[in-house]
Length: 321
Length: 267
Image (cartoon, rainbow over all chains, first blue to last red; front, top):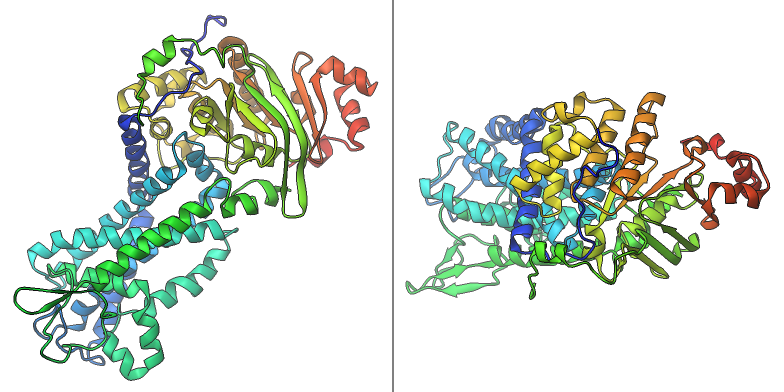
């Protein structure tokens, strides 16, 4: 080998403007890595699937006699408890996935993979958003696999529902992912993730409409009902529930008492030609929360103002001293 | 994105501002976390085509300095320039010219060498066909071309480090940072990693900043920066260091300057 001649062509020191193509290449690369990593880690794929399936096969089967579910929108007939909790379990998949990718970010931070991402010559918000979308892509793969298995367990929403649920999955996934991203900037160590589990995932999941309709909660505990009503996860689950049946929100007949009290905050109502009111509260809350969490996460990762700068994380600086 | 200057055009025209400048110039950088001052008025330079050793114990402030150079967070005082580009003001231009090998392992062990490299090329906005070409080229440089389709899991520690070096070269940087790159490697792997990096300095004319606490990695021809408790105690050639400290060996010089022995605090 000729030791004198350079093997690598030299590049100019002048700054190169990134065109749209470079941004696309970067975005594709980040999403592709998330999906590839997920597919290669088969244990992760199965454990991610087993969790909601256990709830569906065992928990729901045991509870269906205990918990009566009346006809509430979007359902038009009495539904089995399994059918009722399916959107909640999809929400669970999204929630765990988001928190797991937040975990991987804390872990990545320790191994340096997060550093590798953040040192890329693109705006940090773009890199974080790409990473987030990669996580959502993985979550959607899981959700659809779950729905496919649930189909054979007689949970059969209309065919169109599989299509209309997609935007709801993406939106809810983004919201939870942004929340997790924000949290990943706050957690210093991996061990704290057990705390996240106890203090974030479980309360968010149980104090929501994932497992029981809110009017049921109100009968048991008015306080819990109020908490659940303002829980963003409730709105993500309801958004998925309605989208799975091809609807964006409940139709409310204004001449009657609300069909079912207390699912939404009764905030955003659109009058339809039929005279009914369309309740867009869930989709609105989810969108607003996504924007809010995302802005906070981008701020937290901001190199000069954010939490990272103040605390010296990740993986270097103050904790290394 | 108002002015989309084509890549070739930019490459053809030598940039007057940056030609002939040092690969890295750090001027008067101080940094503290809360009350604790981690870096105190740090200044150093890494010329192109020079192997510069950043010598310091664990806790000397090397990690913080690296975090600032890689713009994990911004320097609040002083200035950091990579090939002439200010890291805080022109982060994109600066980071485009920077290659980094972090202390911790950063490869995806479930992915192949090739996949890891393609991912990293994407992070620099390099498209697939070009990325393939460069990945092959970079693996050639570190002597792992025949293992491109193996999973990283199957590699030894030294080989993984070489892949990380290959990865840091994909976007053809002018400055290469390596943070304790030989930690945890056996002697043979250490030597091969060091010789690869030294080759890059002489052949590709890269500026290298090699952070270490191991004095035996220093050669007489290297440039040395001694960092201790957040301050730069010495910057210059090895003979100059010996002369300044009035000692015969680098480790004696380091001990007399800092009052400690470098190797005793191995990671």
